[in-house]
Image (cartoon, helix red, strand yellow):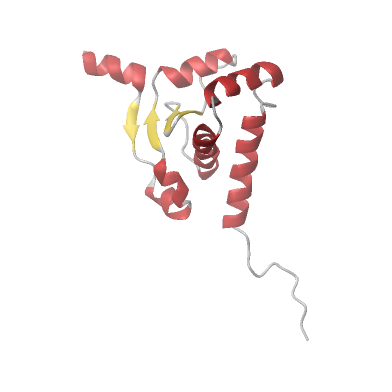
Length: 134
């Protein structure tokens, strides 16, 4: 009974997929949890039933049905970095969301750009550059 209640509140620990860590080693520092109240409450605040991911320090909670992708983990990894480098990050994040809205929150924009850039660099074709011969 207590264990079930804990799972409902805190979610269930889940390993970060090894293939994603192999391709994007930085994601290996993430502690992943699936489900729990945090994705639901965060979703409710945004007018949704849940969100895909929520980060607190190094722990990332994902929704019960959320697919774990490189884009999602890199986005949340950027929030891990923000927690470590921006003083008072949780409060500043909330204030930025209230001021700019979730989509235009500078921390969210930064995380989206970081993930897209990191994926693009990883999958860049080294032979696509114009090379001058001769």
